Length: 473
Image 1 (cartoon, rainbow, N blue to C red):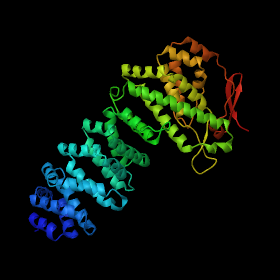
Image 2 (cartoon, rainbow, N blue to C red):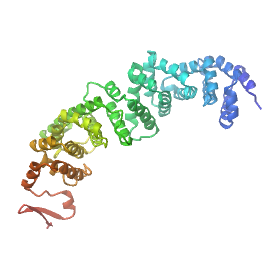
Image 3 (cartoon, helix red, strand yellow):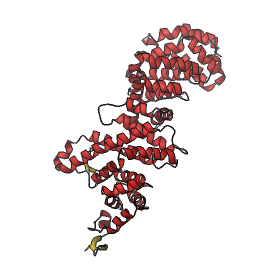
Image 4 (cartoon, helix red, strand yellow):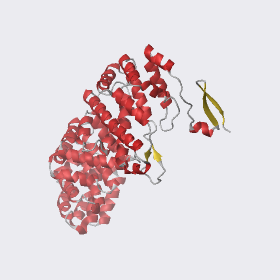
């Protein structure tokens, strides 16, 4: 049987891809051999000599990939072996290979190098700290992270995501460096672009990316992340992905009010809601006032980003101001009240009536609306009026009660809007005689013929102030 000493000599004098691959296979099948190989000084001395040579020799690339796989396996979960890899220069050499081969022509070499570095670092805090400091503070790595994370190779991107997660997992200091330094911003920007591209499938890439951002949010960095992604646009796809990740995290958070949401975050969400709502209302007004042939002038990508972000912000606001913890919930609500979110949400609901936007897809006659906006606006209005007489009165004064009443119907674009409208009405009327009187004085103006009634062959008519149904002739 081939001994480790003999194999080390082979690496030095007679390297062959087949022999190296046989050793790789043996490290997979035989854990004792893997551990012994990684603790062998003769092996690491051979690596120290051949690794710098092979990385410069294009004829040795197959041997180089095999050796990187061998190193990757030999150090896995073995702190002693990891340290030997560092002491004999393997980590520095592999890091250099990654730096000089961050392109699409060397995707396999880059992936295996990333895996090897990941296994050298994982679980060894001292080594991680040194390497992470280099990656975050040395200027040449700013563009390197962007190259790696924008390669057209899902395998490389996934491996890079895993490396990043393993470096910051459970270490608030390294997470803080990531969100604050220039290299970290470049890394996060590219990572969010990847997640935006891959979020439809929400596979392993998205899960690892979510784990990275989730930890950063839990450590109180959402505001820093969101502001770091700011551009000249009202809001961009990276910020939208951040909102999506926060929304998911909030839905999984149980118990007390999330400790990572404070007054500054409340102010941000309220400000973003106000700006996005005004932009959305301007778009709706443009659509209503334009002729059908001019609606195509809309930038549908921009409209889609604004719409998606607005729905997400509304969902986040509604989730937070209905939390069971009364004190932080009321503090959060106070911010919205101070920014007059009630008027903004009422105006938004009013603009949503009868709005349809041309689809960005193929069919010219296809229509899309701002789905879920009515539902989330009604939820917000109801929550703001809960136990708050001033908000109840204000909603009546700005004409919001008839708007809420008009949502008491089935709307496929706004699931459960009728149920939320009923809850909102209860909050509006509770202990408020003026609102109760207004409801009593309201009279039906017309019977609306809905598509559901058409499907059932029924016709709605208004007779003596009451809606009557009859069969259509």
